[in-house]
Length: 163
Image 1 (cartoon, rainbow, N blue to C red):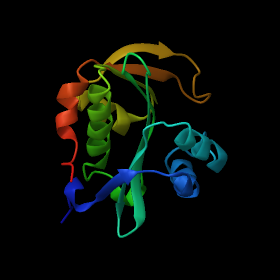
Image 2: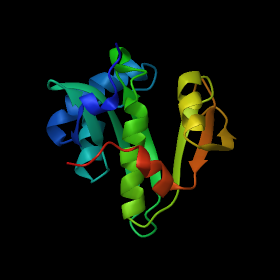
Image 3: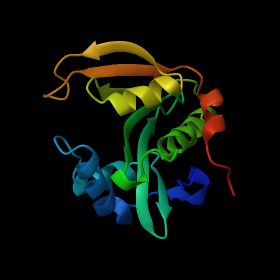
């Protein structure tokens, strides 16, 4: 029986997580993964980086930049390890990101995803992201679809309970 996202521990990543984040990113995006150095830099500069783990094992993470004055968010990446997919972790992490956008006074979240990434497209559309444009050749092997969600406060309701 699949377990829901409440069976996971959620916390903010630290620079000590950089190697694990990079390994998962290489699993999820083998053609263009972020390396350990870049992961460490993103965490160190203050990007929001919620992780989901079970028994100390990284299951999923997200990285989000929040605009310093507007509060709107730019999703850098959303990674869910292969054996942890289809358990609601992507939704939970996007909810956590949206909660922080709403707390910062923002309302919008924007992201890019490869046009060929059908599971990601399905998730984002299910959660209310809309297509905002295409960037040809963005990923080299694939075009990027820019997607926008204009109600972070509503999406924040998908976040796991605090506590």
